[in-house]
Image (cartoon, rainbow, N blue to C red; front, top):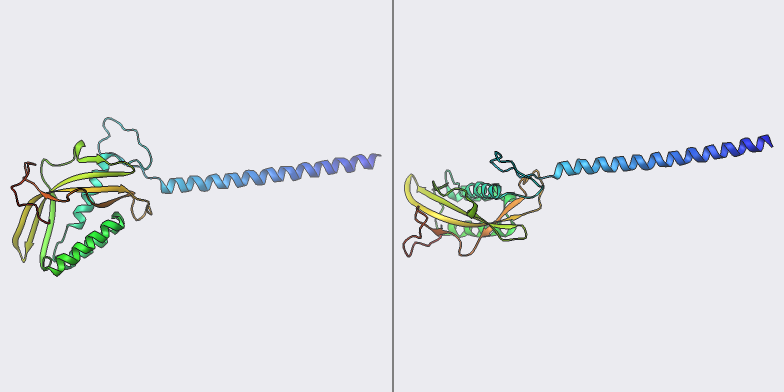
Length: 221
């Protein structure tokens, strides 16, 4: 009788130990899964910090502010339009440098423009740079929401071009640029944004006052 009771207690003890081991295993699995999730969340999180935090800000992940969208568009577009030595080589290099910040559609559009300008002899020995027109910088109306993760940014630049040191173009141009959210590797594109081409009628010459230019000035920029 005594031996039977001991055997029963031993079996109960073994069953209890097996249950505890199972619980420990499940908890260990849950802990590892949570650790992996936290690690992934920290690596993929994009927070867009506005340039002026004096009045505070409520920030959400993957929610770019208008100021950030404008700064992104300005940075990438200036990169594409910077040809320091020879547009024949520099334009293609600039497009390649900005690849991760362009949608495939806009990349194709720029490649076609590169090809057309090259065939027309518009790039050889040409130096180009663009600078924001003073007084035409960021303001609320320059970033317009299209919806579904898309915006139109209006950039007003003064375009300078030289051929073999001789000035050939100095004009003020307004560029309406579409900016969209784009899934990408955070190491290649930490902004999570991309330029998607021109909106509406595309680039238009303007007077530096912001008024419309004289008739006949709307040509390819």
